[in-house]
Each structure stands twice: as structure tokens, then as C-alpha cells.
Length: 390
Image 1 (tube, helix red, strand yellow):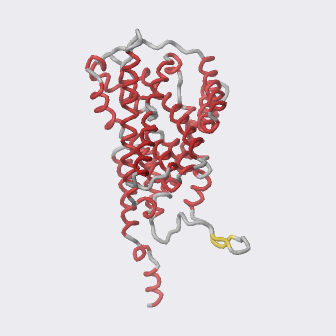
Image 2: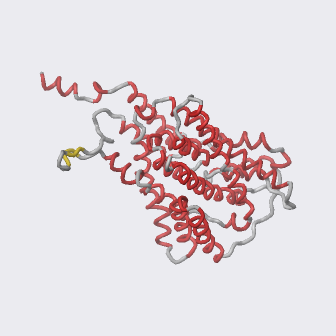
Image 3: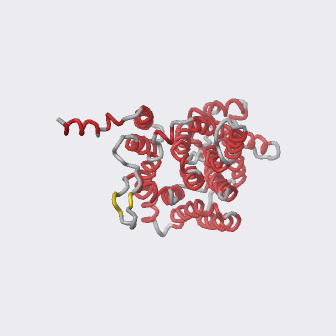
């Protein structure tokens, strides 16, 4: 009888706290959104499942290893502990994913219409606007955000999940769960969030603007561009070099034409494998004590605001450029300046077709879309450079 009582008292049911039950429910909701609704399933499935695992009482998935006074290992750490510290705390997983994204990216649209780089740059206003909002909340004592927290939260406005994880793991790892969930949730909600903003800031005539066909881009241009981009960024802003370095390396493998096997591996099996562990590692930071607080709600609200600001800034920049350009730009493509590749470009194309069934904007929108990836990586480097010592 005593043994049965001991077994019962050591069970997870007895140890389960309300906060853990809430977080398990949140993990199940994330799984539902990913599986049933198709919201960023590649990340939300492992994040949701990791959330469930880390909140099972007594399982010890995220416990640290225990050493004795002589430094001898007594109790090994939990699975999620090692995944997080080996791949996310070191920055390894986000960098490998950035390499895979680079291998899947075609810069032809940007190279054939370089001025769309300005649209991707303008959309990064959302990042810095979110930083200012977080700083203001911390300054007035509404929420307890430090400058390092604000920089991590701000990256959500760029709609770039790996970059948000990379920056947050360096500056504010305790916020990683909330920042990652916010970043990927808003990326998944691009088709819902962006169209109302696009329609509110443009006229029917502007949405119907037809853009000229893009010029062909040579192989030499596509090979030289990632090398030139890397050298410029590495020399001007070394803190952005890790992200853009891996991004450019992946793109070079794609374009050089002599390492197709490496490029295929990077685009498929490698990025897929790392994505699994990245999601589980993020889930390890979604325990009840780290996630259920007022700061999490503030992060979600600020992330949404930053995403909306970035979308609006790209559209307004396109409208401004039209005042000084003979060749008119459809302002809708400015909304693709956020880094949600290629979803934002697809949304632009869909909204454009509503106003003009012959207006195919997908390739034009890919220019600012990939420019947004570059812009978010540069913004990340700026954040790390400015606040890492704070």
C-alpha cells in the first residue's frame, strides 16, 4: 500500500500545477493551428510539442546536468536542455537555417530591379519602431523591459523567425519562447494581417498598376552578388556577418552550379533536420514560469504592432518613390518588404489580382521580399552591436 501511495505521489498528475496545465493547453493549441489551420507547421509542430514536453511535471526534459564537488557528472541533463544549449544558445541552429534559406533564395528579382532594395529597407522601420515602443514601456514602468529585451522584441517586426531567435538567444534568452512564438505566429498570419493595411493605404488605381517585365539576370550577376553583399556587410557591420555570411554561402552554393548535391542537401534534409531541433529547443523555453507573465502579452502586442508598421512603411516608401520615378511601382509590393518569404510576396500578388486580373506581381514582390531578409539581418547586427554590452 505504501508503495502505491509513493507511486501516486510521484506521478505527474499530483505534481501538476495550474500554470503547467495552461502551458500544455497552449502547446496543444499551437499543434492545432499548425496541423488543422496550416499556420507555419514546420516550426509550430515542434514548438508546440516541445511546449507540452517541458511542462510535464517531473519529466525533467529541460533540467540542467548535476555535478558533484569534484566536477563529476552525477545526473545528466534533460533532452531539451542539451538541444537548447548545443544549438540555440550557441547560435548554431538559426545560422544553419539561414544557410538553407539562402540556398532557396533567388536574387534575380532584386538584381533586375535594384531600387526595390529601398522597399525592403523601409519595412525595417517596424523593427526600430517596436524597439522604441518596448523602451517606452520599460521607461514608464508599465512593463519590465530592459534595452536588451527591447532589441530582442523589436526583431519580431521584421517577420524573420531565425533572426529573431538568433538575436534573442544572445541578448535576452529568457524571452526566447514568447519572441519565437510571436515571430512565427505573425508570419503565419500574413494573409490575414497584411491585406487590410494594403487596401487602407492604397487606392484602387494604385493597386491596379502594371509593372514592366523584369530583365533577365546573368549567371555571373547571381554569383557575384552574394560575395559582394557579404564583403560589404562584413566590413561595415561585422555583427551582422554570421547571419548574412551563412545566407550568402547558401545562395552561392545554389548559383555557382558546381555543388548541386550540397545545395540540395542544404535546401532539404539539412534545413529540415535542424528545424526539428530548433522548434524543440524553442519549446524548452516555454515553461509556465517563463511564459505566463505580463511581459509575454506585451511582447505579443508589440510584435503585432511592429509587423503592421513594417508593412505600412514599405507601402508608403513605394508611393514616395513613385513621385520621383518615371516607371511607376505598384505600392503593394512594398508590403513584401517584411521578411516572410515567400508568403508576403504571394499575398501581394493575390491582392493585386483583385484590382487587375492581368496584374501578376509575384516576381516583382520577390525583390523587396528578399531585400527584407537582408535588411532584418543587418538590423539584427545593429541591435547586437549597440546593446550587447548593456
